Picture (cartoon, rainbow, N blue to C red):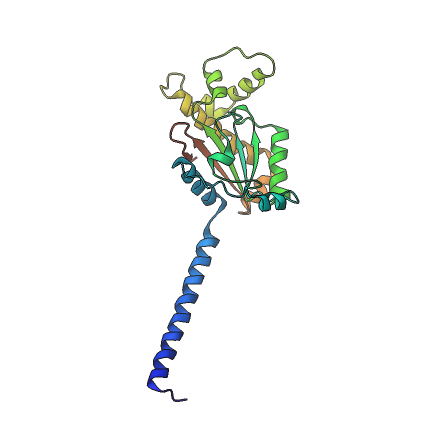
Amino acid sequence: MHLHPCNKYFFIKSTLLVLITAMLVACTHQEIKKETGLDKLMKGNQRFASLRPTHPNEDQKHMLEESKAQHPFAVVVCCSDSRVAPELIFDQGIGDLFVIRTAGNIIGGLELGSIEYAVEHFKCKLIVVLGHENCGAIKAFIDHDEAPGHIKEIIDSITKESEIKAISINDKDRLDHSVIANTIHVSKQISAQSSLIKEKIDNKQLQIVASRYDLNDFKVSILKY
């Protein structure tokens, strides 16, 4: 087939345009595909820390959809501290996070069961343990506060954590180091005490991340261990 020079020019131009568009679509699709649940949370925290939250998934349509079935993409295990609200800190909305909160992030059988429920039934692929600066439960442990009633159980649980025991009582940053140690302990405890969760981690179907929230700059940092 012979094309007129003008038609040939437009044919080549159109073909190039189609190829470029296809490449852009493929790249965009790849970028979207690469974003993990952790990426989503950290981007949300960046918005929150910069005082530019978008408050996603709070419109009437979304909330009515979620009333039929929830679809959280991550489990967050964190402290009950009133200043540490995961949905706000990570700038997420209704139905995005499955949250378990106890003083000092302490977990037992009931909390583990709740985490397993989210992982098994909602197919959550991410568990984030979120410790925070100046945690009252950790501070009570360090100060040897007399704890009445069942509050003593929280202090006793923290006292038994091997990562906490490894920190010197003379450490000038003992409180913050203990917060980090506690968060890492809970992260390890979840996989150590749940065969269901450990199996999914071993099969690369689930990730557990330890993190720390700073009350002063509003940022979440990922802890390495």
